[in-house]
Length: 180
Image 1 (cartoon, rainbow, N blue to C red):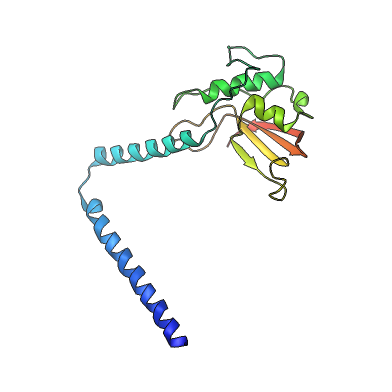
Image 2: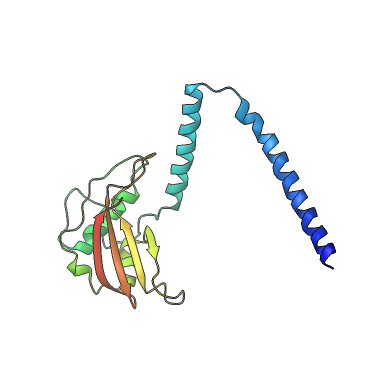
């Protein structure tokens, strides 16, 4: 019995080794083609563009909330509506565009807001970190909204990111700082 199962394992290993060797041999022709600096730069630019396009397709879309219009060039007194307008503006920007939004001055009005109110006005968060078991992850945890975008090909942020800490579906704490 042991030798039979050992034979299957060896056969599977040989099959895997042979298929990876064949795949590597087929792709090695691409690697051996001569490529000058301009060619390498073109390949690198294409790689970064593909990465950026994939990142954009994963980013949340602007909310359809009628509570706020897109950013009109000035801060709104209501922090919920101000962030809503800025998120609509940022999420509608073309690739490579920058924004210079900073953290809201007073985050206190966001405390005690319901998770439903936030998602209705702002749309889906850019990042979710659940701090509770999976059955409560939708109402407990941290939601982060980005008030800007990294430039294509850049590592890091440099834009404001607003993090809401939820407990039982209610905002209990708000943090805001520059993304790194």
